[in-house]
Length: 218
Ligand SMILES: C[S@@+](CC[C@H](N)C(=O)[O-])C[C@H]1O[C@@H](n2cnc3c(N)ncnc32)[C@H](O)[C@@H]1O
Image (tube, protein in one colour):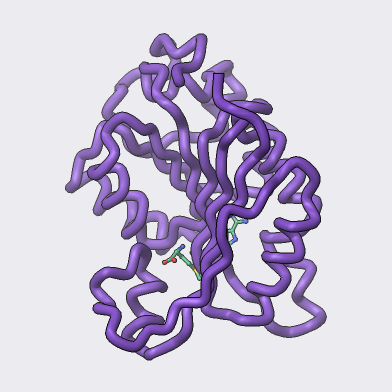
């Protein structure tokens, strides 16, 4: 699927720049124009050091990836790695995903969201900070194209229950799968993200689920 309005814009000077800025969107940059092509767009929320986005972008050159990370330290490491890997289909944004997505991502524009090992906020008084919550899921669903997916992973069993409740309770989404992964015998190097690799090394159980927006891509 391709998106209209994908022509490179004059206020995005170098199509090879890995880092993009919210202010460029304020100046009229459209999401499709960020890459200068109409390929499908996937967004990773909380990309950390970038292990997933860098490797998946290499494996899927026909998909455009935006990695959102708020922490300066992790963002800088990810940016360095992306600049070394030089994938033309990755852009990185240092901001709060729960601010950027509602404000700047148009409805029906994203093929997939990836949320891997989000901060679990285990203390009861902090749980309202969790990124997986019903209001944010409604926003993600609206930003997905029909048939688009939300992919989730965590090592935190209680948060996984919340993820399942949130996904199952979100109108217009269907559950693709819900899996409990025994780390026994799995090579940690196969971990898709930095945290997955770390938790597999520590022998922790991993939980994964995915939700699909009803409908078919046009
Ligand atoms: C536990 S780490 C997981 C990193 C990576 N996904 C992985 O699996 O290796 C969670 C990351 O999400 C980032 N993060 C948390 N809330 C965020 C938000 N609202 N917007 C963007 N990044 C966020 C944190 O800074 C942190 O780097």
